Picture 1 (cartoon, one colour):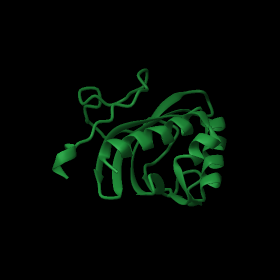
Picture 2 (cartoon, rainbow, N blue to C red; picture 1 turned 120 degrees about the vertical axis):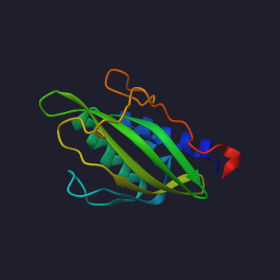
Picture 3 (cartoon, one colour; picture 1 turned 135 degrees about the vertical axis):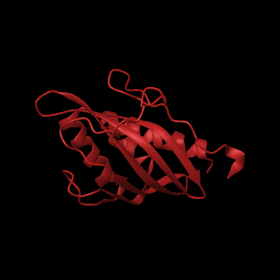
Picture 4 (cartoon, one colour; picture 1 turned 180 degrees about the vertical axis):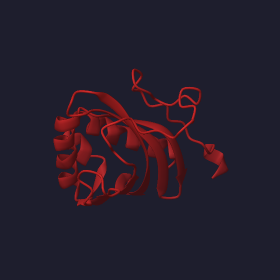
Amino acid sequence: MTTAEKLALIERYYAACSTGDVPALTDTLTDDVTHYFLAPNPGSAPVSGALQLARYWRKAQERISGRWAVDHILGEADEAVIEWTLFWTTPVGERVATRGAEWYRFRDQRIAEIRAYYQQPEATTELRDFDYVGRGYSRLGDEVGAARPLVPEGAR
């Protein structure tokens, strides 16, 4: 898969996460997918299986009204690394942004593994003094991904 194809697949996956659409989610995942989460986040146990992961995101979406956006991607061989932003609503109704990174493995044009690196307190999390706006990242009030490959297609 090219980096552009990986990005398109991840964006389809995130669109389905953002709506809790179980069939659309399972369409992006291998049957034996595993998603690993950084502890001690809520729900940090790994989730395995396409249907199980899709149902996990449907339940999460019902609780947090999330909107995921891809901000950057690097792709090589059967893997990709992304920076992302999750816009979500805390239990007290505040809209916040969680910044993170994920490492993906692909097989048969689908996502086979996800390793997620982020912390999710009930407040916006960002790198201190990083110019998110100046670098074109998604942000509160503009929850649209700004993904662009960091390595040109021919330079891999």
